[in-house]
Image 1 (cartoon, rainbow, N blue to C red):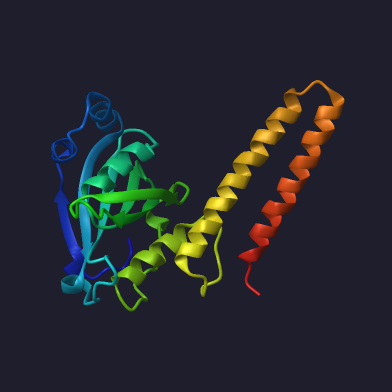
Image 2: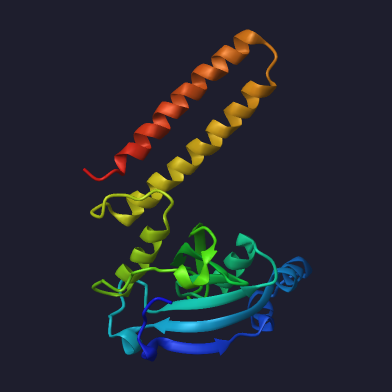
Length: 222
């Protein structure tokens, strides 16, 4: 799927009970696993030994998991629980029938427990035919750069290549917040009965629209 060398292949099924034990999962999380996930396969391991790239920062390995689903959706709560249980970055390949999508979290090593991770936002592709899924991420100097390549390619709004990843993620977060505010204002305008309030809400909506467009334009290639 990603043109990876055979040396990276693990192809090992991971029982869901392993995550229950690791996370001390409650009844609600177990039900979510049972309802949405059929099987989890540890497909590839990217490390110094398997692709001859050195660790970078706190990225020592990157895992690629295939998650075979029972329905065409996978809760971020489920992915977050898997990511918290494993300290290494994980590229999730979600599979349902002949369709697939990719998802990855921006995550960091937990400073108080090196066997757990702090999970931030998720970035993902749309569903598409599994045989068309592509991601080119191995053009990198170390494993941290590989991980950053994965995240950058899954960001909904791309940034210039020279942009620092932290800045790119902050820009994406601001875009997401503005979109939510824009949708909230649109909804309020539709429901509002008083004309003068409607006018003021519309002015605020236009300000948010302008702010969002300026932010989107920042990422365009010159």
